[in-house]
Structure formats: C-alpha cells, structure tokens
Length: 278
Image (cartoon, rainbow, N blue to C red):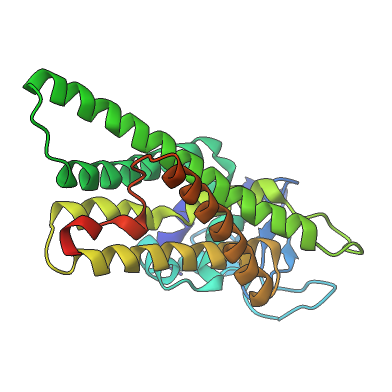
C-alpha cells in the first residue's frame, strides 16, 4: 500500500507481538471514521516488512463497515483537492486523524496571516480611492497607520463573526445531548477552514476586470468551508450549520454598520470597488 498520506499521521507505537499500530486516541485528539463519524481506536496496523492493514470501522453503535480513514494512503495533494471540494471525509481526516489539530500554533499563525491578507485588501482599496496632496513623509506615515487600522477592524469583524456562530450553536444545542459540543475544536476548525482568504493577495496583485467577481467567489468559498467545518466538527445537520453561518454574518454586518456610523473607512467586501465602478 502507498505511504504518501501517512506522513501526516500521529506516530504509532510498537506492541509485544511486533505489530505497529496507531496509538489510542486521547481526549483532545480522537480518531474518527471519515464515513460515519464514529470514534475509532486506531487507523491502521503495520505488520512489519511494509505490510499495512487499514482498520475497518467496527463501532458498537452505527458501524459503516468501511475503512476508518482511506486518506492515510493518499498523497497530500489529493487530500488538499478533496478539501478544496469541501468533501466531509477530507475534513474529518484533517480535523480528527492528523497532527494538525494538535498543534495549537498553526491555527493562530494562519488566523493572523489571513487577517493580514484581508487588512491588505482593505488598505489597498482605501489607498486606491484616496487622493492625497500631503508631503511624502506624511503620506507614508498615514498609510502605515491606515494598514494597522484596517487590521484592527478586520480582527474585530472576524471576532464578531465567530461570536455570532458560537452564540447560535450554544443556544441551539440540544439540552439532552450526551456530549457537550467541543467549541475549542470548532474554533480550530473554523480558523483552518478560512484558508481561502489567502487567495485575496493574488486576486489583488494580478488585478483585472474580473477581480470584483473573484473577491466575491473567495468570500463564498470561505463561507462554504466554514459551513462544512461546523457540520463535520459537531456532526450536526446542514440546516443548523447554515443558520450558524447566517448568525455569524448578521453579527459581522452589525459590526460593519457600526463602523460606518462612526464614519470609519472599513473597506469591507460590500464597498470594494464601489468608488471605481459606481
């Protein structure tokens, strides 16, 4: 069997009979079947000499009798393509069966970098619409602080968006649920699924007539990824996931309206290219 996809898995441990297996899942990083979302004790067993056997889902509840995680054999590029296509199986593989969700640093770094991309987009739109006649030193100083301001505003709007999602899910969670929703895992999933914002920079650098459409498509892609992350992480239906996204957008829009009332140049998605095209 191929081993291209196993490089991202948590390392196995040896047993007395010489068989290597994936270790038992911890409380914070549990293995899941990518098909039925049931918990699993291991992903595969290595019988030495390169002989691997993928574990079959045999959960005591609703077992699907399929491989727990077929993606451990896949090349990372194939996994990335499936994640871009928003396949639930690929999301479960990344969120539950790899080391990426056990590394807290990557979520914060990705979040900051995405916010920097969004701040740059807003700053670029703001500078493109303003005509300054001040001396060069003052212009550079003002532009630098404009970027910091755009970063702060983008951070506040992102925070409002996340608060809206978490508030809705906290209110709507079933009172008789056996397990409480793992909101920490959900936060990590939402931050990871916002990777589409990285496409904002190429869309701005290679500016053309279709840039406004590209920016809208990027926004839709990020929201779709967030929708799938909520659905996979909490194992809830599409309706609740959709309503959670709408709640986040509603609170974010309220924050944007507040900034507009304060007469701040927020440079939000709804105002991009407004001055150039209208």
